[in-house]
Image (cartoon, rainbow, N blue to C red; front, side, top):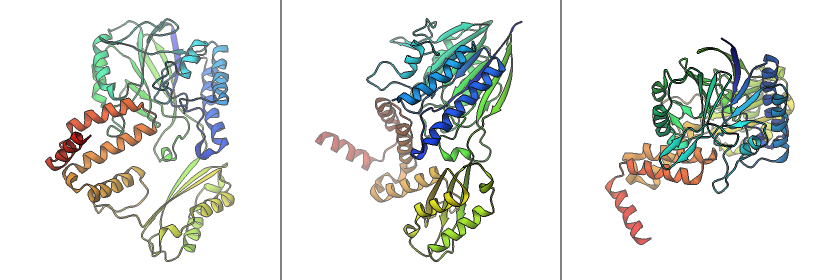
Length: 428
């Protein structure tokens, strides 16, 4: 049997310019170029892009040129670029086509998208313009893209429609599996994929920015660069896959990406009595680290603990500039969480966790402003976090509203709160 191979990457986020630093724009372009360099050198047949090629739906000219330059190199090397849209790529609600559609129409990539009918989702053959199924060189590639709140429903629907094939079958999907289920509309449990065994040989995922695998079926490579600094947590792998297929057998190799070094430093300030001590303690911490040995790294410093003065007296901008100059950093972010109220659980606060802090603050605000919701506070906070994360991810407003309405229907609101909502509705 003839061998066929492909590179599977995702979440390239071209156009991302963190902290308005132009070098970060170049960094994301360099990460994209690295994947292309590898694909060309390895002489693969396809490059699969699992969504979020771009960081913004509105793409500026330099970023579009950056994408075209890389895709043109693939085309010159005889490598087919196959892509799906992520939530960052999709067209604005009132617009028909995205910039991914433009790249498809210009022949730089093949964009696979399902067709939605009144009867449900249709897996139509790709005809150069629309369609979600491409069969070529012994592969059957099915592109689903980003399905948002309907992801689980659509997967269950598609599981019935996909039939077993002699061709090696790949399904491309932009969704979270198990991770972020409480905060992401496109999150599904891993058990959903069990219905595809015997029909699908490889799920090519995107959306989660660190490597994630589920058995020998589901593969998510992660973003090759750090879209958010907290992605640099120890143990988070980021890169892409090189997959070789012979018949129905596959060999999957994970290739770590080369990216700008990011270092995150939690620092307990407990016991300090004046602001000047903070700078000294931070600089001492960094002197004992490897920060100076790195090439223009990014540093994130998380300050926490109980101090004997107002935490606002800490000049984080001045501190960041001192660290940047002394250690040759590209960027320095100082997060001031000193004197943060302790968690109700009594757990020791040993570092910075943005999600945990947001949850704690929202819970405290809800308890003060809406005490009648005490019994369902956890569910309400969860709902608030989902709305925030989906708004930041660029999910359509109508999709967010629809999801909120469905969740509110399931929320066991106390009679007092429900009564207030009903009376307010009559007044409106």
